Amino acid sequence: MSLSETCPFGKTSPPGKNWPCFAILLLALPAGGCFQPLYGEAAHPGLTEDLRAIAVEPIKAAAPNGPLQNDLDRIDHYLGNDLIANLNGTGVGPEPKYRLTITTMLQTATPTISSQIETANAATVTVTATYALKRVGVGETMATGTATNATVYDRTEQRFANLRAQRDAEIKLAKSLADEIELRLAAYLGEKK
Image (tube, helix red, strand yellow):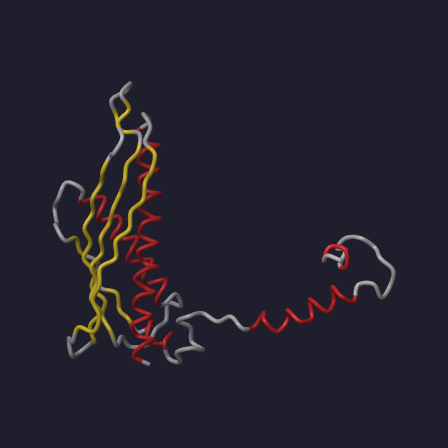
């Protein structure tokens, strides 16, 4: 007898015939509360407060005044905002214990060219963010790392559609970099607890 035969969801059955289905659901109920975030407050008490105590410095470009400076300035802005929201989305935080400095580098590539219109029909944007977490007052570098992410967007003959697609790719790229850096910082601070 299969589960679908003993537990006919959506079908009416005589009273007392659904006990196997009820027993399965009753046995699965305790397992629902067993899952916890890997770097959460329950596993590492005080981690949330430590993350809130990270002050994100203005993000700087590794090669200022390059040909892609405006694009990189936009990505830096999105990345900084996403990091601030991820680390301390409350808007109210404790006195900073740590300072996070980030430098970014941008690369773009157009790997495919359409032979009919002689323009690229896709573009790849790659950003490398090098970060350093320092203790406030002491200046001691606690953690460093590099996070790299890339995204591809389609290009057309319409200029404004290309600009919008590029901006959407930059926003997505900054969000994924912010999430990766936040996770690495949480892992580092969680190990210190």
